Length: 322
Image (cartoon, rainbow, N blue to C red; front, side, top):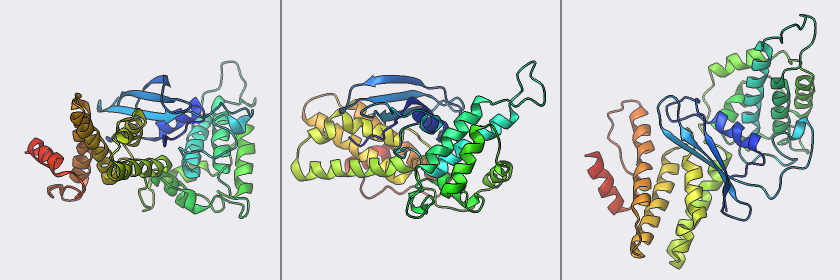
């Protein structure tokens, strides 16, 4: 199963916090289902609607073989292994947000102005920095640029102070946040992030694994004719995990998911089973393509369908559009 693994509930929450809806807003109060029976260790679903536009949102995460056994600030989000959900740049963005919240937090009643207060936000900021440090390559002593697989991660790296992703700098930042102290570069860094440089809008780490897994399923069906490779529940959850975050969806992701749902629709129809849900899902995958086309400069440009969309599905979509 290719579902992205959330090592802990806190890591899943971090992923949900960072990925916005298609409308650009982060307001989202999901319900969590922890006992989804799929794969060797199960999965969890986070579902709800965007608080801004009402768009349905769904996140699906695989579960690890066991909870991390390590203890300490470094392991609040997961064990010693790097995250499969967020790259080092995303973790640093989260750390900066927590540090800013800690600096702006009100002092508890009755606490004097010269008494140091360790707000919980400092603990989470330190934990996020520790997650970024897990991507450091021992042989070079810093986070390799090629491990940044998201647009946010690349923007954070491009606006970072010199050497901010080195092992030494990350350790220093972790130690200061753990003691409730800022490094001093947070506000300037955040201001630079408000006007991000032009970097590739990569959708994230999980996206690459999911697209590859779904394409392999489709190829396997063509080679073997075994309908089970697209009908099992893992295939469906992989498609939902790919499209669920919404903000990372793109033409290829929508096309891959639409194709998978279309294949499921055909397989179920051949078996004489109701296939309306997968047909509807295939059609819903077309919506992000419409939204992406509308947001392009000169939005009146007619949408051209990817050549890989099955002809029958293309006709249905063109009828719906017309």
